Image (cartoon, rainbow, N blue to C red):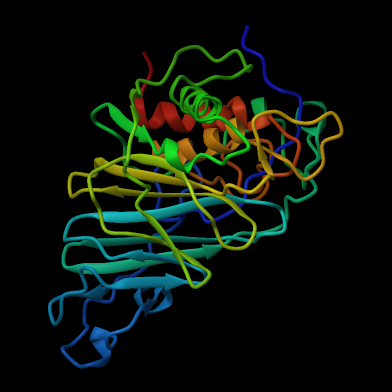
Length: 338
């Protein structure tokens, strides 16, 4: 019998919310393909506000590939034709996050962004299993909600760890062990709900790498860079109260092709909780959630605070290490079962 930790959970924002497959999918928005060749249709030379691309903008008058799209403190680079990029992160309950997703499909560039809610910040350690409180959220094993990107890895996800960036207060071995256990939790569908079968997702840790995550922090904002065909996890400062940040890309065939994860090296993130825990966050729990995004899951939205993929994370919780019903169903939808 697999064991679910009896502790409360939330995970903050910076999620990608899109027209999604599966339960709870958001509605598609109309596309404006009537953009002309005027200067305004090319948005000048600076960053483009995501709101200006909300309904889609034609690239027939000007190429937007390589341009930066911004929403709050989040930005991504517009990918080549046929592809897409999305950004998700995790923070404390004091950090409402912003999601951002940009696609370049059929000659139209579309951006979707959404701010997270603090509606589920009532989560407390111990509440996950014993009650369906948390703003009306059902227990994890009774909550079947999920959202997904609709993109999945068709090959084995091979990733490396930038060990040189490991915070001095922990060993590289200890850190990468927690991160590897996080990917195993999502990949293998770890739960204590009695669910039968494991997702067919696969991954392979290729070891330490000199490459850094393809994520840049500058002037108080965090940006997904242009694709470099490497999948890397590492550490580096993040703005505000962010604890982690993940960028991922897919191609014209809707296959995931790259993912990068950056973890904040502050003392809030720990390998194990102290006896009198306060304002500390479990690295394995954080990684489990972020790997969920890497494999194609999105945040289920408010009212599902007991699921691993929920958008807010309270301190002193290990609950995201095991999946709720909705998390497991999302992985099954994307990968099927063994």
